[in-house]
Length: 278
Image (tube, rainbow, N blue to C red; front, side):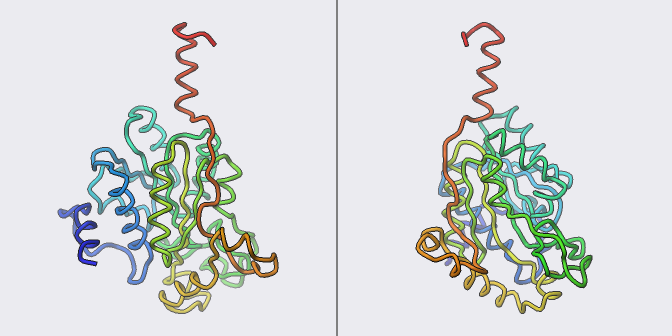
């Protein structure tokens, strides 16, 4: 444990004031630990990494780590990240978003970044609500659940972020929870190694807003819910449809090869210059 703590401290900005803004029991800290361990394993230097975030609880993460970082406007993290990647293709660009940031105001950017297969990694923390601004419902608030703007019941059906990413064209999609920290390490490592648009969705309930309104118990009890309802892709393949009711899959949901936007765009540039025949 001491070694893990030492490693994480190597990547934190010591000139920033701690403690952080996250509530006690929030899973973002677990996600941050996985992020750092995965980056360390892949061998990237700090100056090779650019962390881009939007607004919200998750959006505060880049403030605390010693990489190149960019804290942008709500829902636009992927657009800033796209510009950085096209201008400086040697850099590893990682985008940190919450569910509201990624698939509400940033929804169009998300599906088109996946469709284009831009070489970025999107890390999306799905806590089912807009946590920082008061617990309003988001596109991932489950049907029938409460939020501060759906105090009787949410009548909309939730986006499945990972399925959306697969359908839109992401070459790598993984889903984990903050209960399964070792799996998160592995998913992030694979996503960082993948060339193209990769996505890791992390189930990390907001116990302060979502959990309290829906009487889901403490932060620990909500993590136990993740333990009891998550099923690995491998195990799910052996289960019957009725056994998977009220369960969700974790692990690598897709890993495929597709042409990468930057490579395709470079081909067009060479054709336009006449330096290469089509």
